[in-house]
Image (cartoon, rainbow, N blue to C red):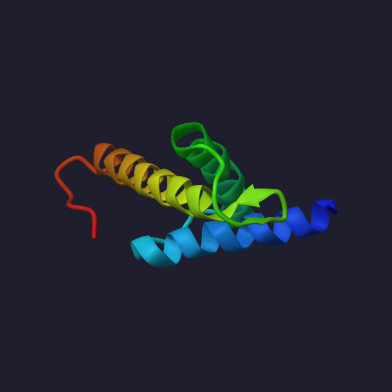
Length: 91
């Protein structure tokens, strides 16, 4: 499988995770690809590799792992944003 195909599939997984959680992955396309790769690793670590495999990713655990990652990252960024703006509420 080519690296390009892995990047495309990783990007789609990250994009789907952002879409399903209603949160934007920071970093645009690159952020989506990174979220897809890390989420895939996280998902296979937690859930194992099962289901359809596309571009080297076990799709279902990869998407679930990416959703977990996106939720964690958005939570951390929100907390960091609140710490910077003492007394101001984040939108």
